[in-house]
Image (cartoon, rainbow, N blue to C red; front, side, top):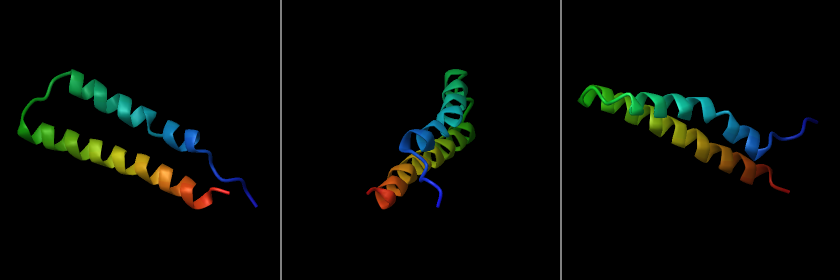
Amino acid sequence: MSRPVSLGTLLDREVDALDALLSEVRGGIRGPAHFDRLEEKACAIGARLRAAFREREATRP
C-alpha cells in the first residue's frame, strides 16, 4: 500500500499556479473580463488548497 501524500506536497503543487496568478495581477488588470478570469483562477486554486486539507483529514491516523 502506498503512503498518503503529505499536506506539504499537496500545497506545494499549487505554488506555481499561485505565483502565475500573482504575476498576472501585478501586471495589471486590463478590464472586467480579465478580472473575472483572474477571479476564476483564484477560486480554482482556493478549491484545490481546501481539498488538500480535506484529503489529509480523511487519511489522518
